[in-house]
View 1 (cartoon, helix red, strand yellow):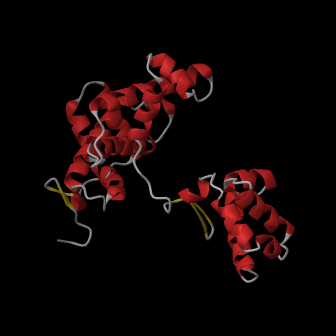
View 2 (cartoon, one colour):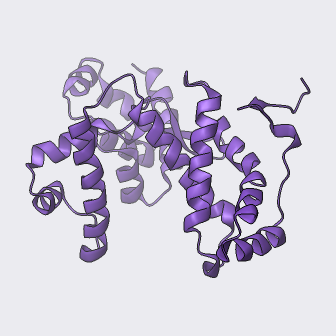
View 3 (cartoon, rainbow, N blue to C red):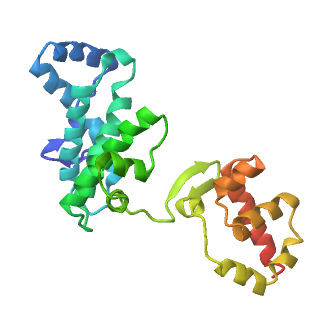
Length: 257
């Protein structure tokens, strides 16, 4: 097998063609006229796009062949729903559709099984959230979604929570320069354990060695329980800068504790 050759579903992806934007435009015109051969050619010319998306989901214990087939379903849905008059590149529209199709597959086949009734409520709730968001001009509350579906609020909340794919708190969600932000940085800590710990270790004395800005960040993060985003908005700097300053401040404080 060659270095760039990947076998999926009996297809040598290294030999797959790649269509230019001009070729896709011509094919779309033929597809609009009901030319099935043009549709097949368009699908074949975008299988490498599917492969590039599928590779993002490697290492999850799923068969790559299965994910590739699911991704192809997303590709076909993209072709059938793409609006050529919007002036958007096909790949820009197709990638989120393919990702969404794969995520639905992974969610429905998750080892943590979610009942069919709960999934049905969740899908209805997502549709209601989208339609209410348009009519209200904002994200609807759980109460408003429940009223729209004539369901209990707790049922809607439980259903939406059940279909969310679990994520690690150490998973990076943003990177700016050399600074990475993690999911854990977004979580507000409502416990009082940190307060007792900081009192026992004379944190106030150590904080005297910090700059005014560092002291403000430590105070908001560990005494007021604010997230890094809330601190960034209060001080007027980026969240990545807050993360960097927080780490620097804690490192300096350890010398005096």
